[in-house]
View 1: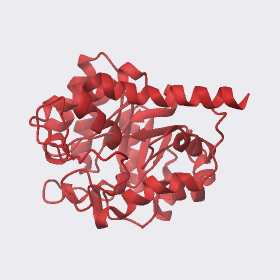
View 2 (view 1 turned 90 degrees about the vertical axis):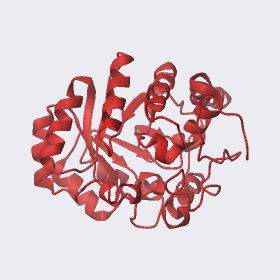
View 3 (view 1 turned 135 degrees about the vertical axis):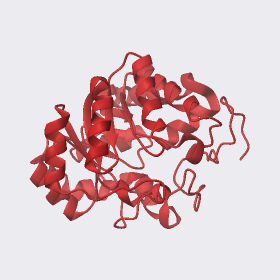
View 4 (view 1 turned 180 degrees about the vertical axis):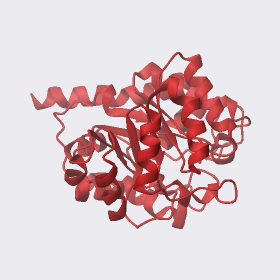
Length: 302
């Protein structure tokens, strides 16, 4: 569906009326997911299958932008540098958490970190599982801008990263050493298998992020909502906070996630679509709609 875009670029989003994973099947690089977007679609559909308390208000602390890179490759920006400052500025304007990712080449992390600095903000940094020596360098690079630092433990399975960088599955011992070196609250993201739950039990990070990378990694079939429902109570024993991403689209989805034990929900694709069609203000407006909708729901329940 053709639409006027705010930023220059040949965008890979199809701007569907609802971002449910069905309009971008097979588009990798792009906005789609692996296996014909199977887990992307399951992520979006599953939240409606779990109860939600509509009297629970959705607050800024319950939302964040997911860590996204590859603005040229995956989204269609003409320049990588055009993306980060606008994506982060919209989150800052709405009062929600900024999450920063990394990737290959190194400029992706450099541009994201610079944007955080330019906004005089602090952010949550998620680093891919590079060899430990490189991760130490990246921790040094982002530490002064970070609220917390984490490892995207599932990222070695990202299709679009293959042949671009050497990534590896990390052991609990490796992660513990990196955690000690970081000297900030530590996060594990990409928790989506029983083996990942065992890793959390051993490491006990401050924050656990249940995620299948938006359906963009080769992993078990299923949704992040289902995984959170199955393992959320156990994971709560191993971390201070549980976060989740994958298919969050409306206020009720966030309320369902909160009901299942999540403190924060991360969102990317749907808000990026608003960013490129209307700019920073439109994206911030879409974010704040979730707050106003939850206030209305809360008042109706009184």
